[in-house]
Amino acid sequence: MSAEQLKSLDMRGRFFNYANNPITIAGAVVAAISAVLLITVVSINMMGGHLGPYSGIMAFMILPGVFVGGLVVMPVGIWLRRRRLLAAHVSDEEMSRFPKLDFNDGHLRKGALIFLGLTIGNAVIFATVTYLGVEFMESPRFCGTVCHTVMSPEYTAYQGSPHSRVACVQCHIGPGASWFVKAKVDGLRQVISTTLNTFSRPIHSPIAHLRPARETCEQCHWPSKHIGDKLRAFVRYASDEKNTPSYNAMLIKTGGGDLDSGRHGGIHWWHIYSDNKIRYLESDQRRLGISWVELTTSTGEVRTYARKGEKIPTPTELAGARTMDCIDCHNRPTHLFQFPNKAIDEAIESRPDLMKIPFYKREALKAVQAKYPTHDGGMQEVQKAVQAFYAANYPTADKALVEKGAQTAADIYGHIVFPEMNTNWETHPSHIGHPNPTTDEGFPGCWRCHDDKLTTADGKRTIPQDCENCHTFLVEDSPTPPEFASK
Image (cartoon, rainbow, N blue to C red; front, side, top):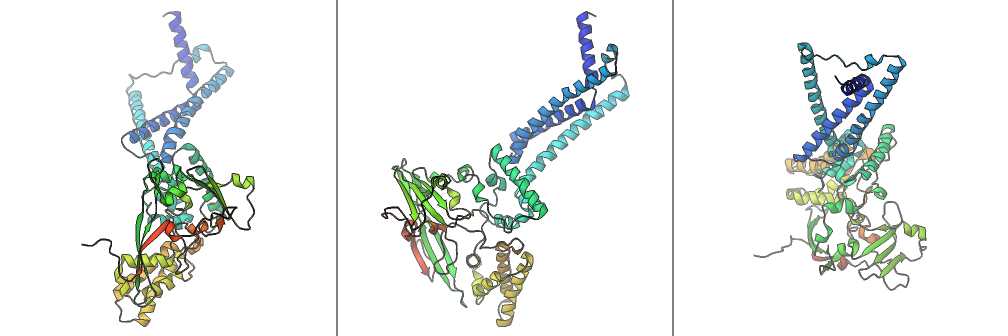
């Protein structure tokens, strides 16, 4: 054997001796498992599996860091092992000696195969379980029921919303690592608040910290595709014995488009499109009041509107002005708590036979608006109250229909009132539309700006409160359903 071969053999022997320590072995195991996890998750993704925000962070940020960490730990263990061997004055011959592994030994060979099989099996199981665990942590059920029990009102509203098939993390976090980190840091604070029972009741929307709508909402709702008017038909029921219906239909001037396409105008074009830009200052944390508005038109003209008698905003205040986007009006796209009056109207519309119950609108509304100490107890009390009224005043009424009406009223209460969290239809404002002029029910909504009180300094321009600017009534308070087409 040549001197070079002896030197190589000596170096390899020393390496095996130095690597024979718990730290290096642990580093090798961590690196191996993370490598298998990376391969498994990436393979699942390539085969069509869904990699959401959490899974993506796990696969492409955390696991590579763990893999590198395992590799870094290995030489640290070798260095520490070498120091211990030198301190113990181990001879060069002993440090250069390879471990005795004779695979002609049947017991050793069988043990090595078992060890290899178990290692691969455990790695695959661990990879699969980790992936499924990450998937579960990003699921709405996890957000709403497992550790975020305080979010029961929001989770209940979410389940009945148009976004019930959109995962919470797609809107509340979205793609990218930076917002993931922000969400997790904020989540740590929420976990502490939940543990110490110091969280607020109700849980208010973190409107100052929401991700811009262009990075979330507009990934699905392509703004430039909203062109023209939108037909909306609805019915309202009176609180009389016959639950008298009043039918309405309007064209909402949704608008959209842009100057380049030659098709533009309407609500969306004026408020959120690149042809125009609106900035504003709110007068309260929930943005129920607007004190200052700046409009930059498609021609570059800048108009500022303020309320008479209010002080002019300082440069510092103007620097914090918000640029209007989707969420300034569509602020409850998923977690909507309807007013009882509207919720009952929609329930009757979807179940027309409830109109046959005398005074159903009135009694259901009275029961839902009453105060109860708990959510579940309230649902039971609403049902009992409706049934008790008809048992006492209309004993001959259809009992099955009355029971259906009572259950419907209880379900409405269950969706919009949560006494334990001090949450109901009044605690979470909706900025879409405006108060019902008939019932005076609702939040300011559009009228936050369109109230005829925001004017330019010269008084020549005012943000108008003109119904025809936003919608045109086709049918108003008709006793019969409208016909939009004839034979």
